[in-house]
Length: 323
Length: 108
Image 1 (cartoon, chains in turn green, yellow):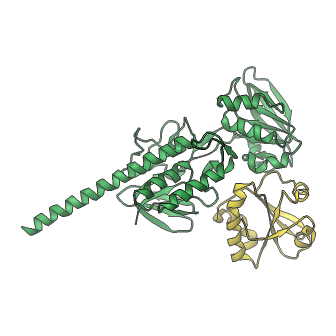
Image 2 (spheres, one colour):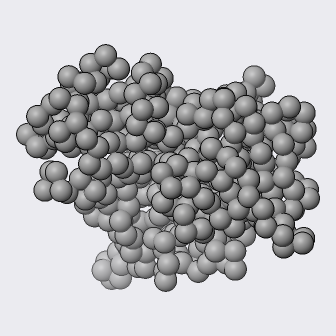
Image 3 (tube, chains in turn brown, cyan):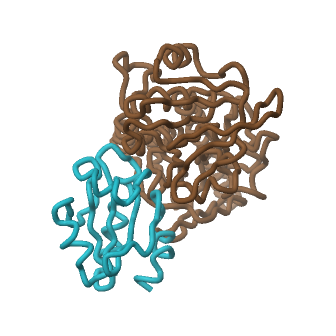
């Protein structure tokens, strides 16, 4: 049985791994088979992670974090978790290929998944002009007219990145102002290839074999219009990935795992949560990393308390038996 | 990255279209993180089902005309060819179990 199993390998999971490993707890990090490293694996330049004045590539940063965790004794496996059983002192995690694993504590750091528009044709045209990964797919839109939907940092980063390829990038946003950071906004505003389409919601995606146009609805007047495009990148936010713990861990109204702040304790003893899966607000690499630190320290204290209680029991037993 | 044999624009006809086998072409690029993640999974499938399906890879950066010809706009894209025709397309990186179930008709 493991002392700690960490589910997730983004900044939260790997930082929890560094701290737990340095505490001598030899954590097992279940990283996922195809999404190891988390969301930053699909970004290019990360400019706001402290300590990197020149910026760092997302995949490079995640590689370094993993290396650092492994250096101190964390084990990382590229496997997927199928189910978890969290009650009781022994927690079990059932994986795709490594069987059922046991641990005395769990750190749940599964992050979040891209939010979909929820349109009928979105899945059908996915891979036929509809994309969720600008770094993967930007190349295919050289000299084309495309759109990014969303108003946050991810949308601005994608739009700016995509102007390396596309001639024209529309940014479609439901409101008349952005929630993206100032620096990302200004970069997008000053880019000649980017045109903002304000107060507009995407209500339809047209196209047979490939995407051809968006149907937009003015969020103020309700008026509908068609915008011809050749590609659509969706960056409207993320939803916490909690399907594994539905019915086991308490959730908040935002759908994130509820923790007893400022700690990372969930409603089940020995189960801690960290990163985007508990954070509907900040969702930064560095806040996720900090949150992973808190979870590892909480888990360490929990395990130490269990050990102490067990030692006290054994001691009490000794006193009784020597009488 | 997958150990699969690389095919090129020049070899595509011989290696894929004219092949008598069922061929899975993994359209990938160096800059695509999910492509790198799915590579080792394809290697495992090739090891286990190599008698039923041949897996090859095509670098879309170096051979972009092939990607354009097949309307690729998202990678990883896996296209299965039989008798020179695309019979199935799988978009995006998926865990092994999901890929195996998508490919059930060929590797059954």
